Length: 124
Image (cartoon, rainbow, N blue to C red; front, side):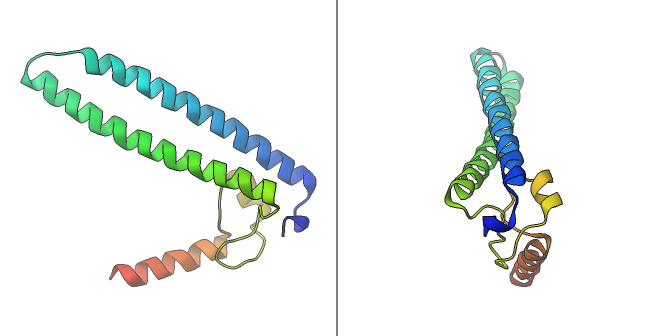
């Protein structure tokens, strides 16, 4: 359904996705360098405990970055396949403002609300 979206909008979203991807890749690299420096430090039990806490924080942050990178890659693939900008929940076009703010989104506002309400229903 990307025919509904203008080529300019798709191009702008693709550019944003590529910039976001580069930024996240830089953050992943910086995190690895920072963690490597922490890993080399040794010390008493308190230092080791702090190192373990830092490792847990690092791993959680890296997992979030990996998830975002996967979403960006998926959005770039949707652009390539001509499916970009279509809500996975409703099949309707995703709002332009939403795509510009979150170019890797898979859901329109309505689709996100639907998914959230289903999630709440099953969480009980």
